Image (cartoon, rainbow, N blue to C red; front, side, top):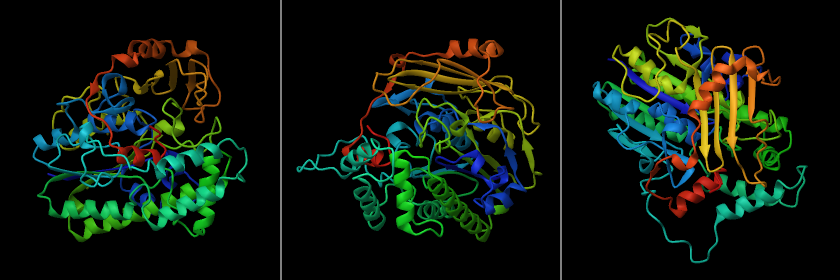
Length: 461
């Protein structure tokens, strides 16, 4: 039986990889690995936001058929769900996870099926428990959020708040950055794999491309990278921020090379499947003058993700058929030659490696307090439906309630097509539309410490 490693990278864009045609040398190791791997050229996340997409990867679950924790925007895994960890555990795998996103916690059932589960951002603390507020009432995360809010009121980098923001981030580089870096996460993960009984399924998640990107990447001085990050906060079109993103990706690529080198030294690389993908992409100011990954932004700079699967002794190929990350469980079942598990999302496919279109369309969706957005696609067309009622001061411009794109020829989704071209997709989307108040709630609440961690990563509570 072959070991299986799932490595997910936050905010990892398809088109920033060398093996997908990017002009900068961002992924030299992954480019080499791609030559002996299966590349899914049309893999799509189940949502543009971690809490909408991670349940899809882990449990084949969309937002319309899931549950939420604390707020309808923060999704969780329903109790007693089948997960890829529980499925593989039943088939003889020891299972372990070393994660670094504060959304992926035991309290939200991301530990289902794991023999060993660690979230390095939680550091052993119970995220369900309330903690006493600082008696002074002062919060560094609140202070930073207020600075960023004020910076966004300006349309140029030079604001009265730029220097305080850069100073705040510089101080964090010397104390505690909002997210653990890949070097540490992968070392902890490798140590866990070394101690595991084989065969093993392991999952790790890296946060290095999620803003704020650590400024100590590439050859650019730290202060210039911090100014590039200030460009992002203000919301100006910035080539130097895109370059910072690419430097961050080159750093991640280097850390993956070092991780694979450890597997080779341990003598387990030749019996290990490695699946690398993203929870979603990053807007990088492509449209609507924004960075990040807004929850209702269902364009392919966020939904179209890289997916590379290296399988020992299986020839490389590029798969063109659309693939939902909610079907990863079926792909793993195929690779270990076992029947699929009991997951809510099924493709109807007999074999993904045969590059045959799935029997059902690929679905991505978002459900929160403002309503439901759903994107649905076949092998050529994509339909987006916004069924939302945001408050008047809500900052994200949703655009038309219905949009259609021939996403194969219009990969940037710049030329909306006639809705009549996608009547079947629009009817299917209509059947899935869900009222936010109908979602079940998983009981629990965030500690103040957890709220601050999420806030510093841009997840304002």
